[in-house]
Amino acid sequence: MSTNTGTTKYEDIPLNKFHVRVAAAGSGGQFSDGFVLGIVGIVLASAKSDLQLTPLWIAFLGAATLAGLFFGAIITGPIADRIGRSIIFRFDMLLIACLSLSQFFITEAWQLLAIRLVIGLVLGADYVVSKTLVTEHAPRHFRGKLLSLMAVAWAAGYAFAYLAGFLLSGTGDEPWRFMLIASAIPELLVFAVRVGIPESPLWLLLKGKTKEAAAIVARTAGPNVEMPTLPTAPPRKQSRYRELFTSRHRRRTIVGVVFYVCQVIPYFALGTFSPQIMAALGVTNSLAAGATYNVFLLTGAIVGMIIVDRISRRLFLIGSFFIGAALLAALVVLSPSSTLLAIILFAAFALVLAAAANLEFIYPPELFPTEIRASGLGIVTAGSRIGSATSTFLLPLVLAGLGINVALFSCVAILLIGGLVCWLWAPETRRESLITLDRAEITGQSLEQEPSGSMR
Image (cartoon, rainbow, N blue to C red; front, side):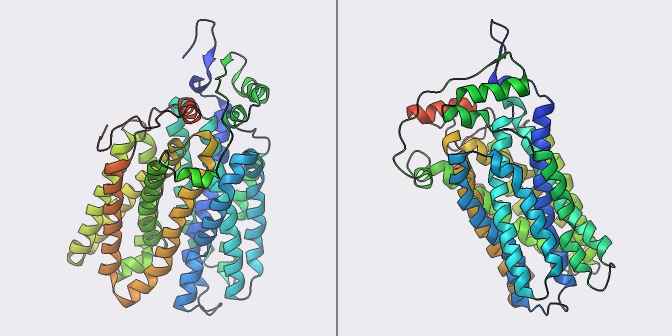
């Protein structure tokens, strides 16, 4: 939107090559993140005899990176809000690449566990800063699409890990070593793209560094941009994490955590162990079924990117939870009658879940003002990793002890809980101005714009 002086408001600047570069840099990190997390299921199957993995060790190793993500996200959030986003964003991929390469030399399961925990720690940092920085650089009307690219990249990395594992399965006597180090290639490429990405202008404005913010915007968007102004923020009286649970932010924090947790539990549990699940359902070619699941994860992410800015965030959230629950319940009830039907329902469930996973990249950053955005993403991501790590740890044990039906119906219940909480409390954020959100935060105005229960 232009003013009478021929300038363009900061949040309404046209999409340009810089925005695409930032989105590509963030998306490349998410591709690497997805690959690192996706490859572990194939590695564990390949390394079982070499590393003498018991079911308990498999459970620990399956959950290790996710557990590390919890601590990385929770630690990084307040740091990124205090010192900025760009320094972490630029160099975390280089560190992950070095850790990935070190996996080639492990000889015992505990060594792999230790490295996967540290990799998860750094991935947790990247989850926070990538989403935050891309959100704050993106023009308002392209925010959903640019952040959706990160979801597509994550799904692509997760699916490509399966393909890479298959292609590397015949490499040497211990192919799992090559599977583990393969992720270093995209990580090093992403590091090269990220060098030189500047700090968030919104964060600089909030810190009173107006000239630095204006210089970055002039360099990346041109000189005719009307920079926003923000009131002086009052002195901070409490920690950012405590502030997230005050009456002002509590509802948004709970919605962010619950929706994320209820999405990632079935996503990771069923994705990591899809071959075992399909075998338990009677599908004889479980590897083919697992590949189908991953192809539909990627397809769903692309579908989600196409529709995310065409419908309300609330409708997308609520609908995906209830539709996903219905498909998974149908899978349990109807799969004994037909192997083909089981694969179709499992793939359809993957498509719905992956489409909704776009919101994991878009919705949490829109819930919080700049002052606590990284901290909000830290607590939301950390909460989701508790759920995903727990589910990845428990699923093989539940499959062995209680059977496939109990495992899948547990995921159905989790999806229904997510849908209900979002229907009651989730605010609509699709057209929300981050500047307006920051002003409301500083001046103490209400952050809510939609009544609960609305589907708009």
